[in-house]
Image (cartoon, rainbow, N blue to C red; front, side, top):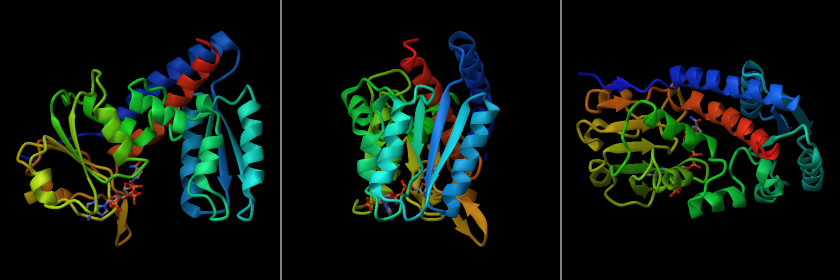
Length: 288
Ligand SMILES: NC(=O)c1ccc[n+]([C@@H]2O[C@H](COP(=O)([O-])OP(=O)(O)OC[C@H]3O[C@@H](n4cnc5c(N)ncnc54)[C@H](OP(=O)(O)O)[C@@H]3O)[C@@H](O)[C@H]2O)c1
């Protein structure tokens, strides 16, 4: 029997309706909408699409959104000046600096410059530190979306062995931290693998839940998955003009008990969690 689909599109819709209600409560109480400022440097076509989709999603749930553009040749200090202005602007509750940045600008300097209370991507050192310490404030959006996709589909993580393939700062590493929290919807036993891991197949075959985030089309094969395991595919790859994930979906769906599709799995959850974090940021900044 093919695996149950973990439908990120449907869950994102449900969660966005909840977020819209909270945003409208906030606007009624505080006289202004929660607001997200996006910063786009240069003209990377993929970044243009990501920022457009994020702004559209803001509008749909009743959040204010602004777009600040800087040219490809912008200097680091010009960008830091803009971030400082947004940090000081009381109408702006969340700041999103779209990555990657042109090479003359140090990403870590910019990420660190965003006020921790407005760091709705959760990439800054204060928010990551809070997560490590077990007192999370804003969770990074893609791993937060993965956790919600699992938990809200009834996947029990408590005591389960989750194997994450990929250790990036935006997916694998923060996901491990989220799933090992001593908290409901977490409490997992987590193993993180990467390109230097030996005997990967032996490790993934021992998992109750396998998450793949490496950026290689169809990487996870059926013989790498224990029958009945849950499989989460974070990858976004283009093959012959088609978007495919890191999992060999056609084969793995006959081994797994539940699986995320690509597209329509993790992708829609990422923007949803950004909206969630922006409303949380507005509430925190308003002392609500
Ligand atoms: N759906 C979404 O919203 C969303 C969000 C973010 C990313 N993504 C997608 O997720 C994928 C990963 O993104 P990322 O930013 O995390 O990638 P990344 O920064 O390139 O990191 C890739 C990770 O995969 C590991 N890796 C690469 N090849 C491997 C192999 N053969 N075996 C085991 N580990 C391997 C790398 O190991 P080393 O550390 O040893 O190099 C690294 O840790 C991409 O397809 C990206 O487009 C999707």
